[in-house]
Image (cartoon, rainbow, N blue to C red; front, side, top):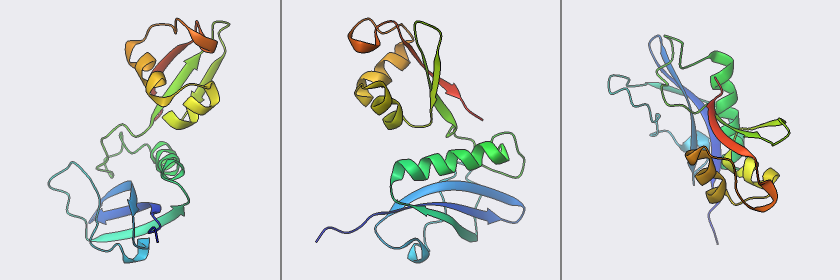
Length: 145
C-alpha cells in the first residue's frame, strides 16, 4: 500500500523572528515534530512550529505559502527570515497584449496547453514563442511580492 503524502504550510519562530514555509512528508503534519523549517539563515534556530493549513496537493500548498508571503511581505519584513523568492509568478503576455498571471508552473502549463518544461524554457530565454498554438506569446518570471 502506497503511503499518503501530506502537504502543509507552517510558521516557525525563534524569539521575535519568524519563517513561513511549505512542507511535504509521509507522516501527519502534527507528528512532523523534528522538521523546523528550511531557512537559509544559519543563525535562525526555531523552537516553535505551528501548522497553518494542510492541503491536498503540493501545488496548492505552495500557492498558500506564496499568498501568505505576499500578505505579510516577508521579503521586506525584518520579522521574517524568508529571503527566497517564493512569490515568483509566471506572466504570459499574448500577441494582443492580454496578460495572464499564474502562481505555479503547472497551472500556467495547463492553462496555456503547454508542457511545464517547454513553458519554463520559453520563460528563461525571454523570447516570444515561435511555434505551436501560443505563437507570439511571451512568458516571463516576475516577482509577485
